[in-house]
Amino acid sequence: MSLDQSLVGRAFAPTAPYAVTEEAVASFVSATGGQYAGGPAPATFAIVLAFEAMNGFLAAEELELRRIVHGDQRFSYRRPVRPGDVLTAQLSVTGLRQIGGNDIISTQSEVHDADGELVCSTSATLVHRGQA
Amino acid sequence: MSTPTVGDALPTRTFTVTREDLVRYAAASGDHNPIHQDEAVALAVGLPGVIAHGMYTMALAARAVAEWLPDGEVVEFGTKFTNPVLVPADGGAEVLVAGTVKAVDEEPGQGPLVTVVLEVTCAGTKVLGMPRAVLRVPCG
Image 1 (cartoon, rainbow over the protein chains, first blue to last red):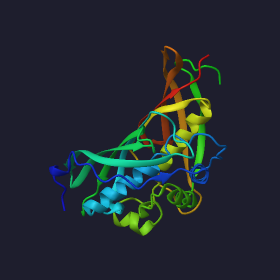
Image 2: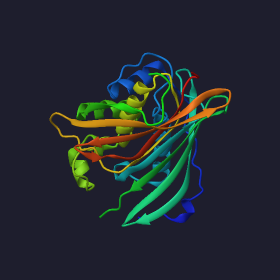
Image 3: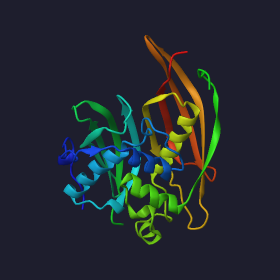
Image 4: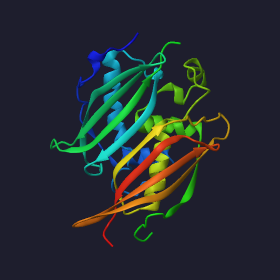
């Protein structure tokens, strides 16, 4: 199975609205050994949205999560994510290369709030490992 | 800390990552990729064993940055995942996060933008490639 260039430029369906709760932020912080004392979510929290968008993409393209390795991740924030936000993410494929039997998939996900304002733009390179 | 200055070395933080942490992180983040929990699956796809989520390591780097600049607001944060953090079944893996202030850019009418470059290592090997955070810090 190999992906082809027709994937590049495609935008996938936005995720269902996700309500950010204090409990969710606290669980995220606590899983990485910290203690949440209120206020903005940590700088990598938007991955919750981006990951859900990626899952939609993988399902649409029938790719297995277990074959995906993360190459890089970048976040660019217009404002921090806060409890009370209702967010959606939409993933687009921005590039595709094949190296050594692996697909190197460049993706960009835009995270918007309930007013349609951009909160965070995040890019990820996904390495889809071949069947070797 | 007071207003950061270019060249400031930030105190290195050490974090321990266990497989239990990875299970909790999977639930909290929604990333249920079994390569981060199940040794057999990790080996089957050609990995040397259970590895931490790259985003777990990146979250540790974010923790260190937030502790260094608690009043800062992260506007950019990025990294490559260059080497896996192998997490043994017993004990855990130690991840070290060091940082240096690379730039302080004054912005008219708002707080300066502080660029922090990080060095994140596990067992003496860099696990993140060019990790870098840009934070807006309050004036003065």
